[in-house]
Image (cartoon, rainbow, N blue to C red; front, side, top):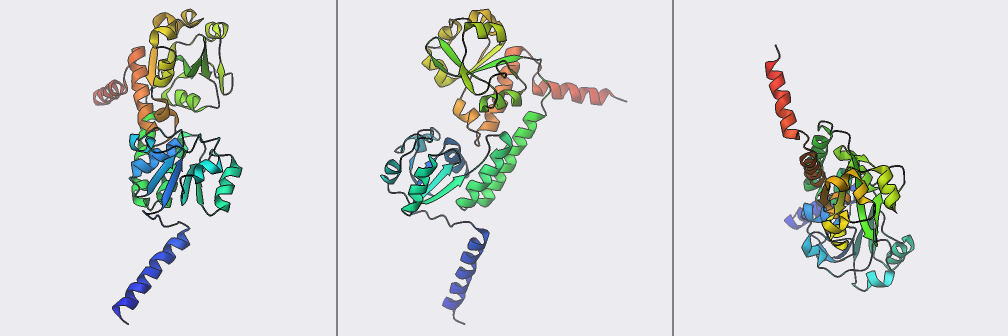
Length: 304
């Protein structure tokens, strides 16, 4: 058997292995469109060697990807806009749509891969693994998934905070803040760091007036950097109707976060949750996680 025959057979075995694994080979010369901020961040974290030529409006990190042409908003795409950049591949978050648009793309020969993952912290690692499989970064994905799970486990092991009612302002319109209720990523983030959502009785994001603010009495306000800037800064926040009637308003207890990093449920989320936890501990004057571990270790050393 000649050397060329051996090379041909080995290549055939490699390709067959990929086909049996159900994973397409990622080609650096293919044109990719990325839909979903969490997917874009995962690609960057994995250092995936693919040619991304466009993204949707939710992709704001990393900066290099945010500078690419946009094909529109994630949930309101049009086939014409996506096709205008002449993609070979589309890698999309599960909530990209409308569904009919993605079907139209496939009908004209564009390969569409959808990463379906529930909006939960436990799903982040599986999302990373899925992106790794589709971009030939399996080993890097497994290592990243393990690291992210370790950080989430560290967060879950933190000592309990004093019972604290928090309000998460997602955005602001006029004189009425828009707060996060249950069944939201913000609610999951509050629970993960040990806070009680003051507006958990409502579902989704809703505007809340002065009466509701006074009644629910949040002790801490958490707001995104963009949201705070949109309302005119911290001074404007405390001047919202009803805010002065809340414990948070009287003490001006505020934590400002990067909402895309915290709520995108991508690879930056565990670090942002740990940072939020530390900020809340500092704001409340609660023992920090490091202090709690020191006390536990000292107690263990003193035990007979």
